[in-house]
Image 1 (tube, rainbow, N blue to C red):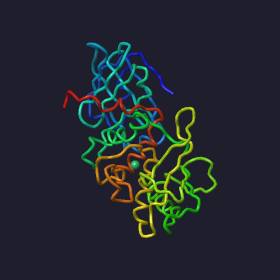
Image 2: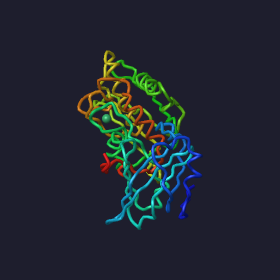
Image 3: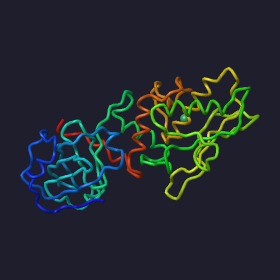
Image 4: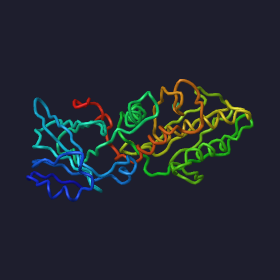
Length: 307
Ligand SMILES: [Zn+2]
């Protein structure tokens, strides 16, 4: 899974194996290295290229020094100029390509993938990881949580509100979310995933709500429902589809709400759109690609002193 290397490494032999190494003059030698393997699909999602970047590291107290990040095919290398002392290690990039990151100790750097600063269209967030962190904080405290599998099954009984076919509205919302990649799958026989729960004859506030109803021992959702009453009429189909698409954003485990009215997850009023924004689609894909349990609070919290 990962290795720690305490040997002095001659970089020259590595330079020839790395296609893009012009960003940094190679160090003469290195005394400490943590090597991790990219989780499946994450590199592609992040659009990270092979290369080498200059960083600085800081430990507890006065300790610190220079560092490099090397991305080479399936691995990422955190290479420090010496072994850090026990305790928290913070890595700060030189330049704006990457987000700073903190690890509880040096060894855990091998399971700490570097995350680039990804663009976010919304001005409410500094970057995509900041958006994702904000959306998964209300329920998951900023930690990456997944469903057991993807796509997540969605099903609905025959349900109608004021003549409006609620199941058909949910099917339409599923299709909207699946436009680029299959996040959800309609499956009437599924024993896990999301189901529509129609409370016939009642009105509800809010009119629609996503609720996780069962989790496994690791806290991953197993079953959830979209609760809806009889608040919609047959001429309100588009509002029902928007609301269901909004609830499916929560079903994609983007739990929080956004202050950006362009977002499907805008929280101040009913959504103004039925399709997720590009930010929200990319956040859902990033969440899926990140390793389960990764704490996004560790990223992007340190200003870059070199900028
Ligand atoms: Zn909501």
